[in-house]
Length: 413
Image 1: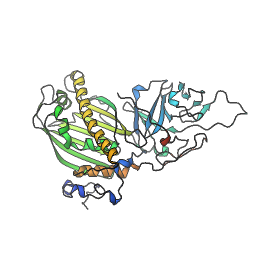
Image 2: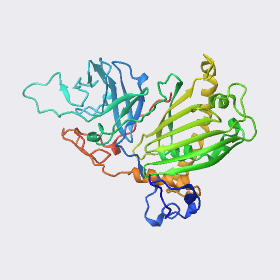
Image 3: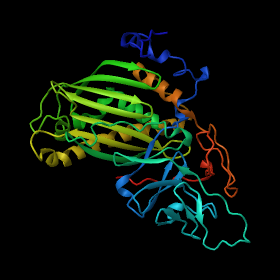
């Protein structure tokens, strides 16, 4: 077993010498280690599920987390609420409903729900009618960084669980580009793709010949951080790539240091050009599972780009940078979706990984995630009593059965 440092990380020298593919549980499934692609995202974190700008006051929209359909609505005060996306009456999606002040009315019989999921009014209810259900599940919800976050796990843990901290967002030194895209793969493929920079051959048409050198990396129970040195070794480079890296229109062949970190369940990437005082850009991204089997995820990304000294220069460069980043993302999506198709066809993970860094991030994702199907149970939608959610916790109000509902597609930005 490799020696660890005081913070729990593993020295690079020890990692490189341990022989990647022989690690137990990676190549030999008979060891009993669960296939990573059968591990679900841990719901006890804040996950972005929508762009704030798309949810105007008085509007409602449907979103989803791992097969759990969620109705988001913004009340008259501007406050966002998140409810289980079904009416307790006839199961009609509340995302089809109408916002009335701070309540959400079902489009069918106008049953009104408060932001916590409790029923506040049934217009035609009389004293002799049967006792109505208490309501539906309400999710803790917060807005930050232009995104709507929900806490799909145990609501008792929401207050003590911090949102990600992004100091560059809103800074006068940076301008933010937002991404919102659906990718048809398990979220773990996305973590591996960003952390493993040895795949630059895939992007040869836009970045030329890039030579990545792994300088060091560190691993803890919840994180893996890698630092690469990037050197441009020739070939044609997209102009947007140079602008994003802070090289200006003329470009340069300077070396850049890139630091990538998976801090469960999020990822970050910082690129610092040679002799620069701060990153030329900083990326934060979250991969939110959509379907119950978690073979599709939605990537929400915030790319914070440093403003150059020339006023208005970044504004002019913005379309070029956007096209470059979109093309890189499209190539990455092509690769990870091909990986997912192979998994689907083979029925298991037949990867033969040799890079110790990726073996470590797989272990982080595996140990911090939740086996798919763990803690799920069916509910009686009409009972009005609480039931177990996909996280295995007890929800204060009934939750929909993830297996019985189809996911709601998130529109691409």
